[in-house]
Image: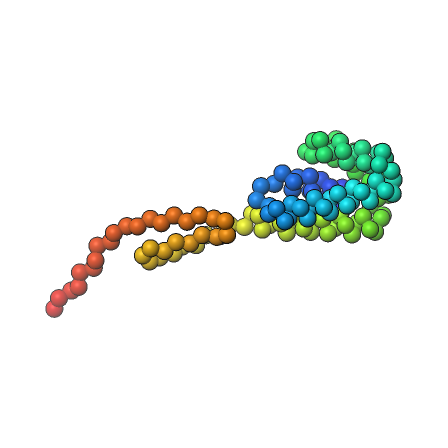
Length: 139
């Protein structure tokens, strides 16, 4: 699949992905809209490519809409447009980076008395258990 179609599909999927920061969502949205605007300026706002993108926006997981966009990209040779390819590559890179950060999980084991650890925006739970003191051996 060409980078433009891949980027558009990934951006639509990322738009509903939980865990992305607001900054990442805005950046993805801005780049996505820039790609769509560039296609509209070059081929018309009523072009078949824009219609294919709009169809895909309504059902991002619908395979016929995905292949329809792929066909329009090939038909209009959008996959040969260096500006669109550059934007699409950047968009894909940001999506991949954002999703890898969103899926990051940190597990910390802390030993001691009264410790609490929480990541950014996280919560911490403290479980306190009394332990019996060790008896010293007498000689």
